[in-house]
Length: 246
Image (tube, rainbow, N blue to C red):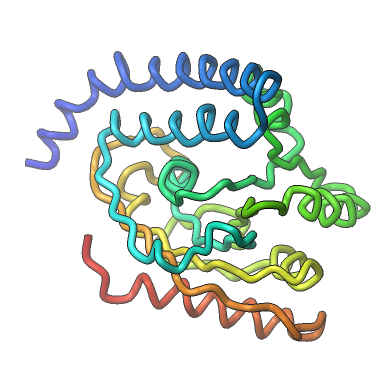
């Protein structure tokens, strides 16, 4: 039955969804740039990012369950740390967290027509991974964005998991959280690997669960506590994956 449903979905995916994805990305990018100019970056990010991402999940279609919204203080800025199973994670977090978030993006993405300029306009942060000095610039850039409840999102595994197993966490996000004294908001995403497996275009409808855990404070942490902090946060995120059904 699943093979039959998969075959029936292909015309919809290629003839409607992917063309819609391209056109809507251009339209919402232009809308974001316009709103950033006449209103402000937060409104531009909501329209050009949140609404864009929600429409994509609705039209896939994907049913999304979010657990733990009560753990978010809307007036507090966080370093959001999430596992990473699929490119689809971006649509889920952007559209469903209910927070004003900024992404850390590779500088190469700035070259993408419309999207690259729009992302910079609404305040997302580009980083040159080949330049060591960019680490200091990244801290300054994040600090400048963290006002009035704006948060920054990291996938500390650095790449999408192909097996569903969570990879080791890189330390950069935790160094920034400690340096800026920001609490960490751990998030577990379950199910996106079945919607869009890593390094494929094999999109298929399904269900996703997002678990927002209690924040992990960084007050009193120092540079030599980073490894322990990263391990603790990784365990919290991993706990959300155990025994969960969607």
